[in-house]
Amino acid sequence: MGGVRHPFEPAPYAAAPGPRLPALQVDALNVASALSEHEQSLIRGLRPEAFVPLVVTGGSALFSIALYSGLWSMPIACGLVLGMWVHELGHRVLLRRYGFEPSPIVFVPFVGAVQRMSSQPADPVAVASVALAGPACGLVFAAGCTLGHAATGHPDLRLLGIALALLGLLDMLPLGPLDGRRIVGAFGRRERIASAVITTVLALLLQAWVLAPVCAGLVWSATRPAPARGHAWVAAAYLSLLCATLLLVH
Image (tube, rainbow, N blue to C red; front, side, top):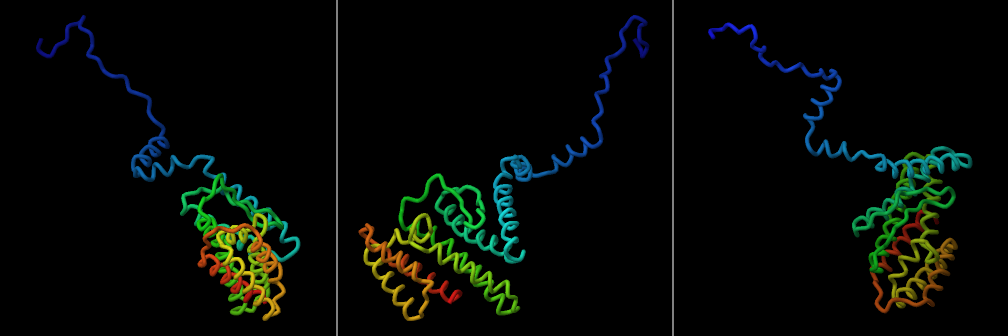
């Protein structure tokens, strides 16, 4: 009664003070609460497996550069790997556009670069489009090296332009696992015969013997089974790439 407590009345309950959080932990909580949901989801997405493509691609690229630099200068070694990477990026962009997710790009010294697919488009035109994208992007990079040589006179750029163009020409052979075989797979019988004739005439007129393997491959492909319906635009794109590549090499 009044404001006086009875001697046997228990003291009023008071909550015990909880453990104090370290200042660093408090600051981390404040930062986390200040982040947006999108930023927090990005942080949660930084799982170890997310770095596997970077490690695989970057590690194989550095290994290839180290081996190439034993034969050529470091700028040429880096340029070769960069040109192959641009080539593979062309394939990668088209594959993703068609809804396929390829494996990380792996550089194989003195072979090139590869990326595997668990499956690929069933449509021959889609397969040819993906195959065309690689040499087309590689050709743009090779042309940039050639233009860089014309502007600066640096001999390494000229060598890079020719080397990457030759690699692109080799890749367009309609044989084995090369892109050329996937491209020619969309040719009908008429497109195969026409491409073989045009390429052979071009090689003879310009005395461009570097086209001889391509001519032989196209003649061989004309004897193989072909789709009933060909796609002339694929053949036109293929021949255009061959001509543009020849300009850089010849």
